[in-house]
Image 1 (cartoon, rainbow, N blue to C red):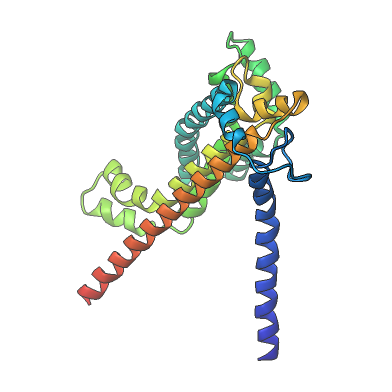
Image 2: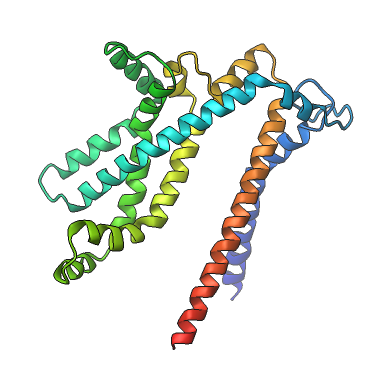
Length: 272
């Protein structure tokens, strides 16, 4: 009992340290938003102010960069998720001798430095007459983000019971009906998670985007350029808004999930 108590308190201590390490930078960043200093810092504290939210509202270049990042991330989401799903489905069903090689080939963009991906993408598409911009940024990011989607969907597929497909086919369903009514609902949680990861990976990407963005500046590139020319707490204000928005969305999703789980439990209890 004593060892179990020590283990339990040790785990609690570790979790506490982990979340403290994770959230303290965010708290400091949020506090710097209200500091009346032209530098994004909490020390020295020069008084509370809300002027950096006004400065954010007037920073048209930052909002344009944010919008560009959203467009690129949405494009990556639309392209990378279907590619990742197709790759995962192929690897889960292919049993040939080259399966290991194909898996390594599909994973190679994920293991390649972002700088190399950006430069190689720019050189290849420049030779085909495609200049830098939103489209080339989507292409460059998709080359490695699709691998994230593939891994998440593939992990889900490894737990799928293939006898369900065989049963559906035996009962007269065709391949498309089997995929749409059996496999796709099973993969839905993994696809949603992979889509969220793809969107966020694209939104925060810098190394690859820097070489293929052309004249379309994304938020990460804009912030990096402002670091050299003079960063103000207006970017902290934007970060604080994004953090609060993420928390609200997460809370709404969790409440919805618990409500659906409770309804499902009631249905099961009613059937019993």
